[in-house]
Image (cartoon, rainbow, N blue to C red; front, side, top):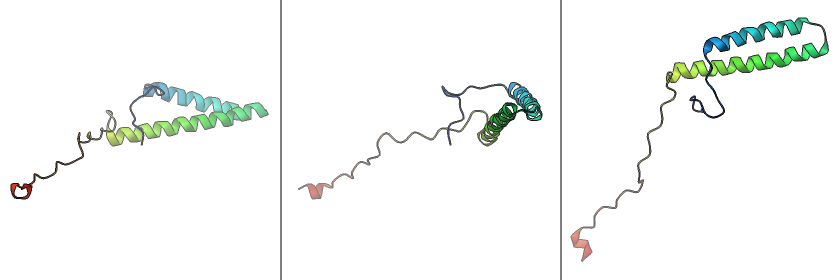
Length: 96
């Protein structure tokens, strides 16, 4: 699962703005769907797809926030600097 923190290709938008955009898109899509014409029907279909993608992204974000909190998923602990264990010391009796 990708890190929910913003990266270069993401931006944080306030929930109220997203909700207003969602409501606007719903009204626009309904109007387009009710208007006769092939182009308006195609635009309504495309708008529905965009609205569904937005809803899915909001649901993923809400689930991540519920799961990990607003700070995001905790980082994994850093691995030890050396994975090689030191060999046991050779007893003096064996050295001679």
